[in-house]
Length: 167
Image (tube, rainbow, N blue to C red; front, side, top):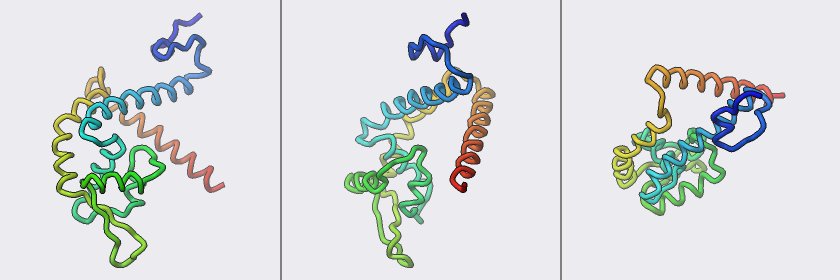
């Protein structure tokens, strides 16, 4: 009988995985959860969630032009079921402001405020630890290999999803 894998021991699974693909998928999910927790431990003491932190980073990157609400949603690292609610909370906290677009009054443009920029500047100093935990134990060359492998997985999944959605 094969020795249990590290993931099997970690999640206390006694039976072997059905396939290497199953173990790889579950390994990605488990690792993402651990990285997500590391980010949460860093950002939540500042009164925001990891999803709100992601929105602020996106809007900082957009610069003075801001971004339409749906463009913010499309750039999120993880799907957020209620982008409007997420933005509402950030606006109430003074980190984001929204304005109707002049050419298309139906479109709402989101902007990061100076307060939001200040919060990100404070978090930039400490988020490094969470970022490093996501690649803990890997040498720089291995990190680049991991990045390339994950890029390939996402590209294949996008191709599969676009084929199934057009069928």
